[in-house]
Image (cartoon, one colour):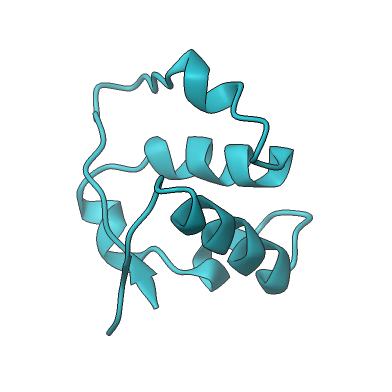
Length: 81
């Protein structure tokens, strides 16, 4: 499963305060979304739980749980491959 999105690619990432304050989300989910928000359009083509977990202290299962959380609360839309 991959995820799609379109984020600003000007070298800065801006997130709504309401997103950061959303008590339904874990800090892991907020961090994953913040990281994904920094990706350029070209990087979105290869976003997977595995690619997000690479080089972090989180397992693929941790990232999958965070992605499911973000999707459940309407912050992401999954696209079946």
